[in-house]
Length: 156
Image 1 (cartoon, rainbow, N blue to C red):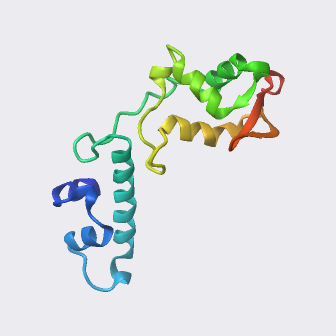
Image 2 (image 1 turned 60 degrees about the horizontal axis):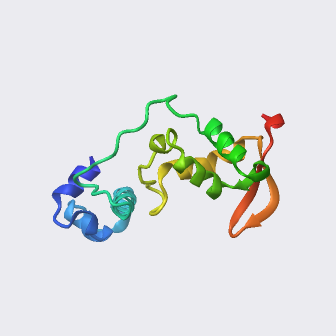
């Protein structure tokens, strides 16, 4: 709903938060409309991040989500690590393997992550989920700024 209201305002995602709140009709002390201000701030950030991904948030709107069960990131990541030397590498290297794969690459959720301006959704989800999968073990080493992981099939 908030996105529709912002779309009606001249300037849209280019507005500053305070301007947008005032144009929506909220004036006076900040304490009165703090929740609205925070919601507008969050929504404008998401819209700016979508624009950073090359998506027009006012025209394109949200992209459709993949159907549940249509992807198994854990299995895909295991297959990617098996292609790396000694089943060891960084998530960045495994991500490149996934993107190049002819069947997996098109299925990756390339929608922009609203929390991060330059990261697609599949990559953010992968970074969050991999810590809960015991078969991907941190080796204690780092390559550039990435942790080096080892895939251990026996721990699954």
